[in-house]
Length: 563
Image (cartoon, rainbow, N blue to C red):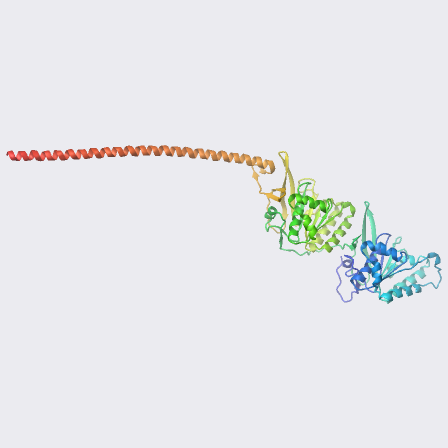
């Protein structure tokens, strides 16, 4: 897309109020000059013109005149009522004037003096009556249906466009597309200051509307083809995002609502504004994890928008109750909104335009696309569509969660539509079958800008929510489910045997201690008896020695007396 010129010489513009179109044209239609809106039948020319007129009257204070050469005023009011436009009410308020000019080809007499003076008088009166700033002429072919002289036709067209310029009216002239040229006459596109081509294509039985600004005098404008959407909420155009990678980033961490998954991520969650891919085969819990993210965000008071392509919002809310999540309360509070549509309902670009419009209007902080693998079309177009959506969400700082169905358990397969390389984080869900049962495992393949666990973790879903089980590494690797239970039982039994053997050895040592202690006690007692006996003998010896000493004294005394 071209950049918007900011010089003072840029012509003034009148905003249309059509979402996306004013971005494509950097401000809207040329103010005070005529613009041509052309295309085949059914492409939305009249609705485009009416929307510009109604928005001018209600949003920008510019009354308008709608002059129709085909539809009657009452038919026009009925046809646009589905868009929520109350034309009769605007007419009653003096903000809008509708005039139906009946043109019968059989009543037109072509002469050299043919002119549109009567039309100018009628149109001028309508403009003056409400002070109109905008005019729509729908459709111009009918006005010139009876003219075959090219010189008269060219002259009158120039007069018409010149009259509109002289009055300073922002005018939209609608025209049917011709063979090999933009209009049937092939002249309007040359005298218009802005030419907008609407197209309604059918590919693979799917209709896609596209818009292209063919020319815009004095102003830069987007030159691509842009898909646009017409539904009960009006018209919205999807501008192609620029190719510059200048998205802002945030350091704020956003919790996933799953404590175990937060613990696997270094900061405790994902960076706000990042793009997250959750992939896995059917039944691994992709939607449930996305629902946990939505529940956590809504619990923080954030607005969330979920685009679902396989289930209705009501079904998702019901299923989420089985894992303890009450999404219905968030829907009722207005924080959570589901937009459900079958992939075959629209073409890829129409899906993109619808999502773009809903995001702009709802202003969410978290967006979920579940699943992107449901989108149908050539892989290159699907990838281009998703790339534009990723760029758009990043440019608005929206945290995006994409779920993708994969056909097998490999990391390298191409089922992610080439989106994995664009993602800031990728969580892979794997279903492991062993011992007659299936268990769910999870691991983080990448998380840009943060450390993360490289372990495969088993996770379980119950009424208490989603819980991750600590990694269990057995002799043959990470074990889950029954294999883990069996291995734990075997290891517990082995540990019990080791404890029992250890206790037996402790008992043996205790018995030996007791026996040795008894022996020591017996020896100590025997020693004490021996010591007592020795003491008695020593006392007896001392007594005998004393007696013998006394006897010697007596004998000695007797001997002395005899002498």
